[in-house]
Length: 377
Ligand SMILES: [Zn+2]
Picture 1 (tube, helix red, strand yellow):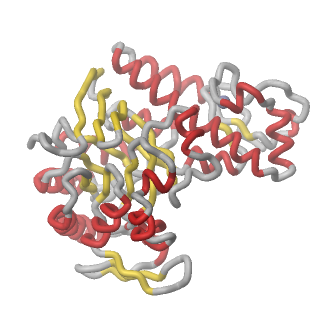
Picture 2: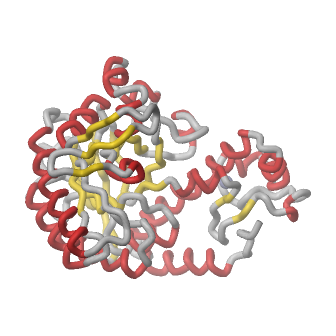
């Protein structure tokens, strides 16, 4: 299957074993891969704006269909010129379809529709594959995701299989509902922790034909081995020139495991959520800014980090902001954690390009495991 004529394409620039680096071209510019999307649920990555995102090297962000269709409403955003203009961000945006967010609202799921109560005002809301596409086309995201069928873990094989087959039917409906030729739609592979179901889902989703594929239902509490087995079952079934995106994964070791198996794209709330809890990511292990030993420490979070926070502020200052619950503290650690994540993936790309990915990855994992243990509060 070729992706000629698609508004989003991917081409390889180098590979190192199954790991690969390349360029995802979108209507709002190119994204080097592997790459990471910060989560801007409500059209904002909490506490930092589009100017900050450019400064720290963000190339693409994720926004959330479910939240934006309810507040402020996709018609409002469309009327203001679309999501890029609304949030002041002129680089690529991917929107997730809402199925995952709805999962926590105990939805009623039929063949036709997901029904649930709005978290904002309790009103009844219905989401269909067709509506999810229409909302995302209103928002104008470069990449929309099909609506998939959420399952709660643990699920029986039968439940997992039924949700997987319904997701396939919904993917076909989503593709038929697409009206904008200037925006892309990605499929989503499901199948839980069962490699056999994963392979079937990947093959049949690929047969429907998409320029990229989310691998959904991972990073939800499965073991690292189960996740790797699922990814290894999926990747060979997908077209080589399509984007491979593990949804919801963003921890360092998990992303490196996935990149080693040919994954191109990630999103996760982890870097930003940890920041709000005073946890800073680092190459020599993660660091809790709450620790008393930083009270008089003039060093930055991480020596050599190019982020705006490490360039200017000490652990002592950041700890003080955290202790006094100043909002600036969360913002500054968010800037650091996202910078850390973007650098990690930039280094992964460079190591794939020069053929040293495996040894680079080992060094990162060992460095984090054996680095100064500072995660305790
Ligand atoms: Zn930093």
